[in-house]
Length: 482
Image 1: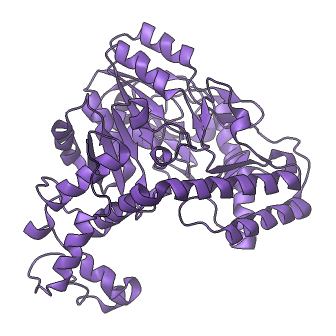
Image 2 (image 1 turned 60 degrees about the vertical axis):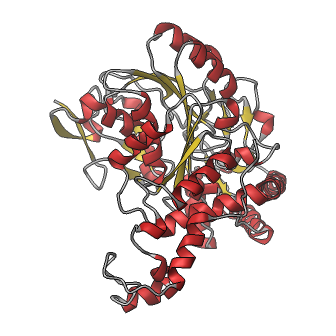
Image 3 (image 1 turned 30 degrees about the vertical axis):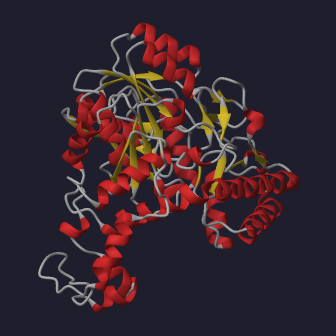
């Protein structure tokens, strides 16, 4: 099949053509190309405001595309090796939710690792699907959750043969990949769909140096955060579908929750970023991987830090590793990752992606520069010199396996009562508790609160993690089932 012309960007082209017409707007948005709010126009720029327009015939309609958005979808599908692609302007959260709701109805089982993003568990609440959790492997040195062991997936399939789908993180936040291709083969042999949460793997299909993308591995659907490593505007993503999934039925699911007023700023950013990756992705991500390896080598030469990579591969729970990820273990300098995160921001004006109890992640992508990497390395070296202390008394385990008592949906919509977190041991959680980022729940609705979890929550609060998910803004109390 002849590949499409990726020099095209149909949405961006149509938007530029429309802007040149100088049409007088008697439609929404009410700022009228920026004339209605001069302060906002000065803040964002006249060009931005002039392109913030409503759906109309020349620009197509996101909910029912027939022209330029349809063409852009075909180009996106071709670029990612998918049968169909959908532009998502409610973030990858909405793409994950559409995947799960497309695959599972209320009461259906879905096999998934517990170290999923909150958006996946939200999708279980919305759909009524029942989770069959596979606890991920754990790296004892790093204290991080890994991928799913293939034998654990096999066991889950054997004990839950009527499950409709398997969801896989590809990769985890730290860059760890499960054996996705083998999981796909297992799932399809048992008439199950495979859903890839590819929020942190947008770039996989654009370089042979990187792990397999969901579509390359044969997954049936993949939620792709184009705004992370792909360079589009925040909140813009793709939902990809393989040949076993009816694309137009998926569009109907998407339209249940996605806005009817799609932002053309987001849509055109997806279109132009797809063009950039399709034309230049191989060279872009070779450069990113080289920068990440340079950074790892420099950081590891400092001492005590451990910037990890492919040496962690074990053929199973770490089947592959994304070498563009700059994940660094900080425990041997006596600081939690979140403490290093705070010091970098407050004392060095360096904003990294996140810090947890033992690691930091500096997210490298299409826009990074070598001189900025050198600044980060220099700062980490100075932090070790100035702040190093004994690691005695530090937690080193990021993941605590949950005890599930009720489905997320039943617990979330149950009658609740609020209790102090310190007094909640033995109760069943009816809301979320998580550090954000990364947004992986410490507790999700339906899970038992244990003393170990309470101690963990107290520890991460003391270290300065940003806790979210509870009705209580101070995260001092928690809703539990009555």
